[in-house]
Length: 166
Image (cartoon, rainbow, N blue to C red):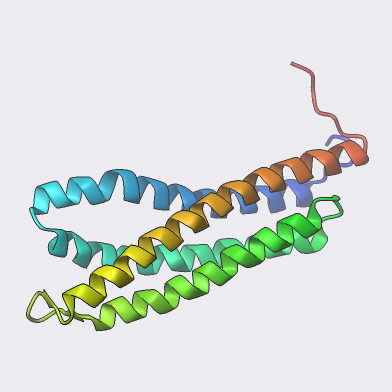
């Protein structure tokens, strides 16, 4: 094992990356590929929405799990970017809470038995907010990932681990 880089650090970092990639990679793939294909195949935004309604429950749960793993990493971090990472993490957490709430609000505006919206205007407004907040959260997650990778690199340098030169 390299000087300063222990098995526990490697496992913690792998956990952070795996959780983060599952959540954000899943979101990116779903939004950019599955939704457009689903709308084309199903021929209906509402029918695709029935699938998305369930998938976003899982994406939000994956987000909660990823944020727990990231909080663990942050709690043991010694890098100077720690306060920036915590601030970004907190913003992502707040947005996740709002998305959980908004998701429930949108669910309540759907009549699943009738395959219709109870209040289409209110639903569309709420859905637009959901999409914008999800996009902002995605951008903050990119920032959080960059801050995390930079912090890890600085931590490694501080303990004398530079890695193998290629």
